[in-house]
Image 1 (cartoon, rainbow, N blue to C red):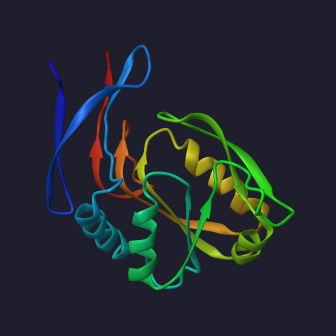
Image 2: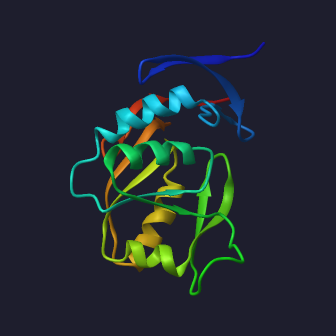
Length: 178
């Protein structure tokens, strides 16, 4: 039997499949990739939570990159994506930090010299689709800290596991301990 979890986010009712991510944990899997109507609705809703004065919006490469486009367009500010692999086209020096996420495991985040310079000393918002353990946020914060950039706001579609008062979100989904 396929288990599901129902949520309403940005005016959309969604039935999320429950997927195992480890021997004893399952998640209500939220995948925004390719869902342009939902991406637009969530992006516009999240943009309303980003106050004036943010210099850039940052995120890690992944399935929510289209969300960054919508939020950046709506807010009218620069957007930066940290990649999960070092690219041969990146300008040196390349900054990197380790990252760990509940669905991706251990990885690294990279910024090239050009993107790093755009973030240096800026006030930024961190954007993601789902905030669970905070691993991606911690890696992005470490990159920003190296540049004297300050993450002023963390804005996500959903929090997962523990509800968090320090994260702006449109909703919450539980973790399932099997």
